[in-house]
Image (cartoon, rainbow, N blue to C red; front, side):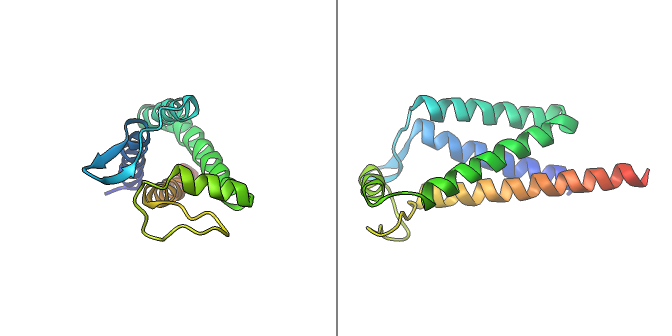
Length: 144
């Protein structure tokens, strides 16, 4: 399996997982993520879906655009988690109080729920794979 197929698998897994934020996902009393039909989430989902399509059909430009979006996405997520005030942490915990958590919430710093932990992992994994695809493609063209 080549690096493009692995990267596409990561990008599609992230798209499916991210779709859960738009649709919500719960079984009985188990809430993985509540429906977040927020304009920002919807616009980000559309942009990301376009990037995945670009990566697949126009890899030469798509990999760079996808890499930039993933880098911005992980940067915003990390800034959001590291710059919250005490009130912001309390609001974050209140907003996601019904969702499933692997790690219990804290009043001192924001701890993502299970959905957001997996989301951060998939964004990071996808970014690393896009970067590796860019590097390997450039090496391949340099050797030709």
